[in-house]
Amino acid sequence: MPTTVFVADQNGFVVPLNVKMEKTNSVAQATLQNMIAGGSGDASLVGTGFRNVLPEGTKIRGVSINEGVAKVDFTKEVNELKTSADEQAMVDAVVWSLTGLESINKVQFMVEGHMMNTLKNGTPIGDPISREGGINLQLTSNLSPSNATALTLYFEGKSNDSNFSYLVPVTRMVPKRADQNMIELTLAELAKGPHSDALEPVVSPELKLNKSAVAEKTATLDFASELAADGGSTNQMVNSIVLSVAANADVDKVKFTVGEKAPKASEGLDLTQPVLIPQTINEQKL
Image 1 (cartoon, rainbow, N blue to C red):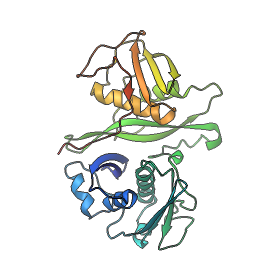
Image 2 (cartoon, rainbow, N blue to C red; image 1 turned 180 degrees about the vertical axis):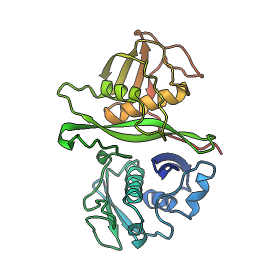
Image 3 (tube, rainbow, N blue to C red; image 1 turned 60 degrees about the horizontal axis):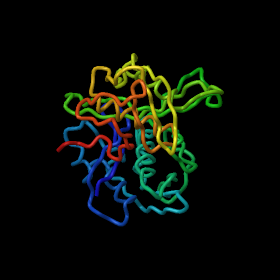
Image 4 (cartoon, helix red, strand yellow; image 1 turned 90 degrees about the horizontal axis):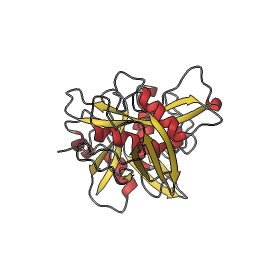
């Protein structure tokens, strides 16, 4: 059963990874079980530089799902992490893993049967948490949340030996504008690249968007020049654009054009048809 779980890379970023688990009727419970450090899920991470974020020894006391909210009861180990960064990575990973399942929109954390406002190092868990809170959140000190727009963007990460490359979702806060177009804003921020030396850009700053349109949940992006990655894979760039656009706009497909014509084929990509949002991200080639 292919499932996407969120794990941590060597730089602490939370990253989606497609893994295969045994079929089960308790998918949410099995997904969390797969995310416990030192458990059976570690076998899927060999050679990636990734690690599971639920602390070793953690047990899942129970999972109940009601009206889109998964209430998850963990044992005390989840409240024994050393830093707030580790706590936030764990919370992000659990929320984004479970909300990737069809029946779940939010996650309510419990520890040893009790609701808690925060974990030991101050990470809030009092209310049900959704993907709207972002992932790998980048905050700007002079930007207040009321005047900001949250964009989730996908950049490239690499294992320390550079043998495994993957896409990393990052939520960036940008100034809110009255006339903002979420797709054009997404492409502009992708072109600026990541705000971290640990990530690599996938969209060239020279790639200019002429215009965008959305019809029947398909976004059409018309570029001024042929699609070219910023020193990397064109396939990775297309996935980065498609995933980023889908994260910030209500679309199922993305159609690429150059000067309102189909782009040239590259790396075996057929861009004459709209690209579906990838269901599998960062699949390890064993």
